[in-house]
Length: 321
Image 1: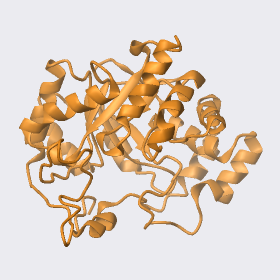
Image 2: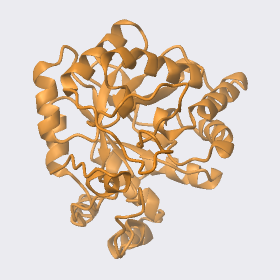
Image 3: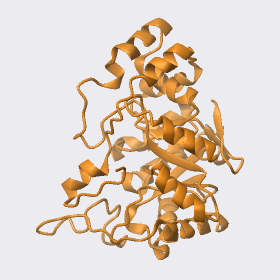
Image 4: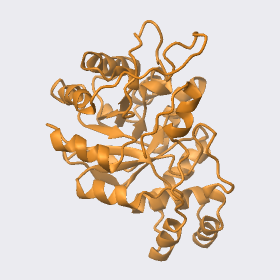
């Protein structure tokens, strides 16, 4: 499998397994099956609510001799309620304990959104709402400069809790401001990226800044269900035509497009056959004309936009405008 070389010199596998929305009851076996199939990159987060089960799958794979810890790349993320410096180290330690690991390969700030702290013993993961039992439950902001949070995240590297640090869901403006004052530059930017949201300028700027880009929802799958398009990416005639011509599946075509752009792509599946299918995208090489044709599908369309879904939580909170 191809790798992306980070600014630290570490090699991040370019195709990973996304664990968002994998049911807890299926998660351990999915992770173990994925590792057996050849996956070496696992993308996790506190907010996904299944890090314990991901850890169980990792333990099973290691115990069976399928892999060693140093052959895996494990990513997790700092949730919005833990942005204040005193909560950052406990947050990563909770993820490490749940995953059964001594260190992470990458720890990301999940959103540039700081919410009121919710203690672990009260609710974990806390998700978006401050008090779901309230008469009118809503998310409650607790504004904090991102630089303050980032300084605490930087300390995690020296502590040995994570080898690399980075950010998610940020624009070029957020990224520029963060890099201007950072002691440790972000190694990775994870954002929604697929043929309907190619983000060419963001990718170009990040690459120029030596920040590797991870694409989540690389197949254009819906997030919170409120931003659907009339034609799914995998059913677009351009994608179907390339798939027929190359003998690949539509998913393999779209994943190969992401890989050839130089991004890390995170694809989620619980199906053993689909896991193998997605992994084989690393073997597919698209012609320049096909790469251009897929790029031409861009609509600047987001499936996961806080400006849309935060309204369900009682607050309008855009971050991309």
